[in-house]
Image 1 (cartoon, rainbow, N blue to C red):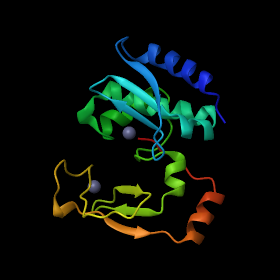
Image 2 (image 1 turned 120 degrees about the vertical axis):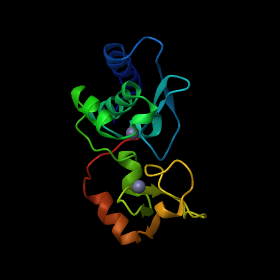
Image 3 (image 1 turned 30 degrees about the vertical axis):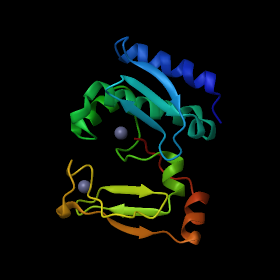
Image 4 (image 1 turned 90 degrees about the vertical axis):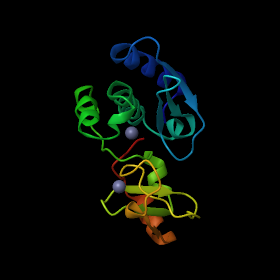
Length: 166
Ligand SMILES: [Zn+2]
Ligand SMILES: [Zn+2]
């Protein structure tokens, strides 16, 4: 359980080390992802709900993941450029796009034909194509959804999973 003041201090320290001063930090109230890099506003934010439920090490990894997005630029996605930058600043996690807690509790799991994973809390109502494979809706990259059973969710929550960020 990370103290929010400590998280903010750590965020500012890491950002001053790696980013130019026009980037700022804030908390957001997202429940389904751990962090976000907003290129338009030049902000890096961390969910206060998830921060409060994570260890400081986990939050730091979320920060490094988002800082690497800021360094790599919006076009980089979770590609090689982003990954190399992320590793160079100490990020040890995976490329996947969902918060550590979000992933564990999400009921709906989707996968595109190229194997990118997406999670949702609610049943997806419309056909959705993979955001990593295409920017516009494209049936060639449709996500195929699968619902997790309550037993499966319980088993996952009981098992520590690898953490992931957006
Ligand atoms: Zn994909
Ligand atoms: Zn990301």
